[in-house]
Image 1: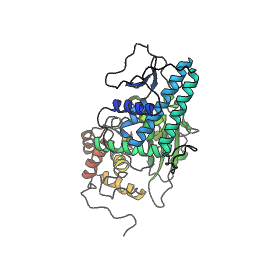
Image 2: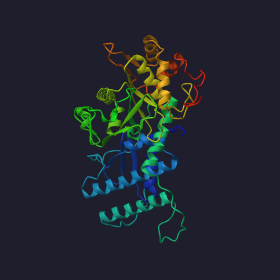
Image 3: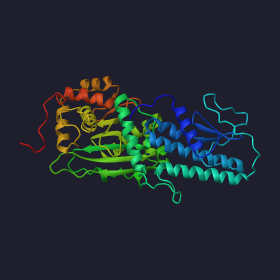
Length: 420
């Protein structure tokens, strides 16, 4: 999707202005910060347009027009409510004074020729304007005139579902992320935050670990996990154990966070809390390795790496290579990209990375912009983290670690699992 040309604020103003004019509403639209204003015969009315401002660069042209129509309807409703003396839903809490002047870069509407005034009740005017706008938006979305209008009927366009919208927005954000290495300004909740925990202990059952129930209860975090995270609304967590692979020495489990938990993952303070939570969950399950990352829910690519841990420095490095390098559409190691790895591959990876000494691992992490924190005691785990502002730095570390362990993209590919 191409970048937005020109001034995005002006484009939003013009699109909303066109929607109002098409519906027969005369007035001047202006956008300042996150506030969209309409001045139509009196003091302007305001609504919050932050959502569209953030999404505008990612939207195709036809969806921009539809969203602009939605804002136009909200402005008409705000205008009606203001004239009736009540505050509309979603409107700014106050109306500015009538001395407000429209920005000079917006065209002024021409005054109609002087005629004998027609006096209509304000309620009637609002109803007529609202009905006209609804008809216009309906016609715009479906491409067909309303029944009884005498126009040619065409098949209605397929409306985009919320899931379809989230997939499209996340894919667009992901492409920008991979191209620029920075997080785009979009709704964080189109992503899912996931914690991968693994163990090689033959009798361990991560999902039934006694300490897990104290941190997660009923699809929510408890106060024991983190009091502030536990208080978040519209947030959920799911425990998803993997089916053990026969004969495999490693087994794992995923903990998936959605809603406000993922929003926390994408904030500075929240990221620290989510990293600390990952450590608590790893301790509660006695996991030997773990990784916390974000991805598009409909993709397996673990694009945004944040926190990795291992019982030893080499296991922490293996967690980085496995979670980021093995789950990437790019070929970061000598295995074929794009296919989910098996438990047998994890065991082989651990054996390869164990050959690296601590200094080599630390150098690879720091050169990629990450932090390497070995345990205070020999028996304490090692933690590797990457900052919020460097969402793709884990990939850089993978390239260096994999090359040093002779499993980089230029090294011979491993034999397929089960092959002679």
